[in-house]
Length: 379
Image (tube, rainbow, N blue to C red; front, side):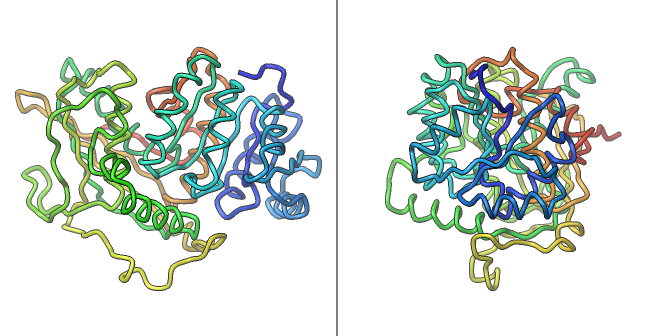
């Protein structure tokens, strides 16, 4: 890591739709002058100052000007940080140079990426460099996929305590969720769909549950693409983000040395038979910089059931829930808390991690204390 850096964390994209929520959480948790130092970064100093004032951050919160298309500005920003949080997506368009530069410089990197094909490209290109430099690269540090990755970890830890060992089968069943997309998320989905259509290698990554576990291929996994009956919960249907989350859960298992077993089976479904919406079903889509209103975010929620099943059929049930919009109200806090937790975890070596594999129980503790995420064990 860059131990001579001026700031513990630089938040890049702080003036964007999602970035301002991350900045707001950091301002509430750590005002400038506290033990943890942070700065806001983006293309326009005037816009950064405007957002700083709108969110109530201290007037002396440092502002750093950096453009994703300017390698010199990016390098200067990275040189002033121990860790970079970025909300500037789609990451396949604006993240590649930043990941490469952080990996080379030994600077930590965290984002909200839900673009598996691009993540695999970054793993293949930069994992070895990050391991050598000490940079900890953490993708998908929001609701997708941390609520599920850490949900599985919590279910498995519960299984160890109650059943005596981890189990080879976990089901994630979404009991309910409410929240809307931002224009940035829509742009990321569109970019990923276009890239997959035009590139056979990226298409193969998207099609495989083990697309993010290079060198390892586990057993066949449930397809999760049709409405059907689950004997444990009743009618279930496809979950739109399962193709992203399942890959991160299997990568987490790999990175931790397969504590869930090399034959681990995992899937995600929606209780009640919900179906994947098409773009045509979603009405007018938000443009980049737009997203749910404050009222819509505060009315949001999520509730996920995890069923951990031992080989002899015994079960434990756990849940993860939150009382705010999962995509923005929750994800912004999750991303900020992951960065804060990582700054206090010098024992985590360099490499491209999942947040759950890197930080495990200590991240769960921070999310419960500061991000409104509840992990519980059910009777």
